[in-house]
Length: 327
Image 1 (tube, rainbow, N blue to C red):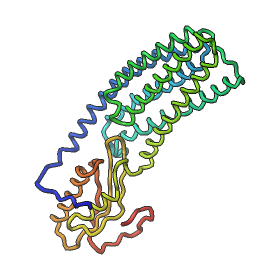
Image 2: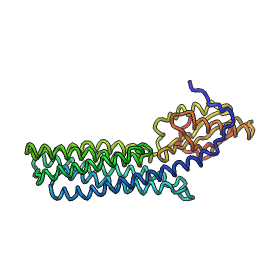
Image 3: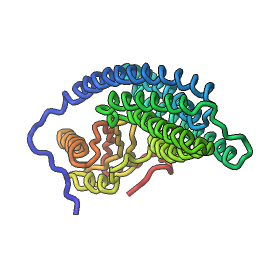
Image 4: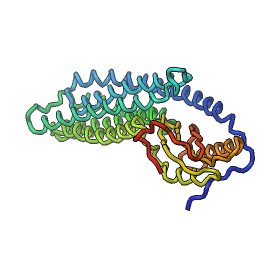
């Protein structure tokens, strides 16, 4: 059974917002530096592998180049996003640019999905003989595969410490990790062709790389869409939240309860709270403070931004929307 959150003491929460803003600012600057380093390394290797595709005609290397092109575009967008997220909210953008990281993640994963589908189709065409499978220079293919792998390992080392900070950084890390797997596929295919002469190994490797790309892209698209559709944050039990708010002394009922994610680490909740009509302003303020602290500290997902509409018992709202969930 859930127990109501009763606030004891007089802890001051007034400095939380400014401290949170300072942390976001520092984190965003660190993310921008990390992404810029990764972008420089990735773009250099992208140009090298592009030359390798022209020289070798390898499908596996072509898929890896396509994947690396996706890496470059996502890293550019992620770097810009990290810079824009430091801009403060305005009257026209009340959340600032925080939501941009989710849009960037959705766009990058969509590009990754399209590249994977194209590579899979091309691999099937080559393996079935519709298109000729031929690698012109296997040794060069192996060399470029090794260059790509070393570059990706370097990028993963750079991104490792911050890859779980938000969707923007997670997307960048995921892109580079998938590309590292692609480079392993290129190397494996080159070795098979080099030592056995089986040219279809290149197309097979390209198809396998594509199959690894597609599910990861779909998962990230799903996560991004859940945020953009303002679904209840993952790990937050809205029924438990309602039960806790209902049990705060003085609260009669809770309705129009909504919770969503603005960006990574930024959750919001709003609700209409019906209270006893005979309560004083001081008692209503205490109810409000009790609910805010409860939502910050009690649940697995901390909710720092809350908006409560306090209503006296017997109050009837006009033009009530049918989209709201009622107890």
